[in-house]
Image (cartoon, rainbow, N blue to C red; front, side, top):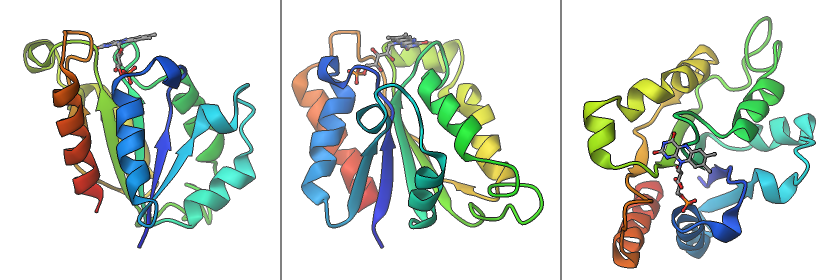
Length: 169
Ligand SMILES: Cc1cc2nc3c(=O)[nH]c(=O)nc-3n(C[C@H](O)[C@H](O)[C@H](O)COP(=O)(O)O)c2cc1C
């Protein structure tokens, strides 16, 4: 069963990590469907019905994004607000996300040490995890790359991208 990866990056042309993740996943187009919110909706006018239809076609969905101000980029928050609607994702007859597996792939500019001593990625992403759990989803382990702005090497990014892809195959 093919998996859906929803990418939220406001500047993928300037990206090192998320763009590498995308190019690695593109090698497996039989198994992985990539969907970029900013490519589809440059003005963030999200087609809610189309997004709900897309979600309904997949049992496993990964949300990929860079950490922005210790949370999800605002476009992803907008997506959640608009697409996970009452009566569809929760509430009466709102069972369309029920039973789906939801994963996350997150890059941070800050060093791994920051996320081991100051606050963990799991703590930061808790509201997102709980939102999907509230919709009846199962949360998968989060793939991550720490320290994107700390002088990482292309080899490190490439290795991380391969590990990410392997986790989805
Ligand atoms: C608006 C904005 C907010 C950011 N906030 C954080 C943050 O809170 N913590 C962090 O570690 N990195 C933060 N960063 C750095 C990005 O997470 C980092 O540049 C990105 O993960 C690298 O991935 P990329 O090469 O795909 O862009 C922020 C970057 C931007 C543009």
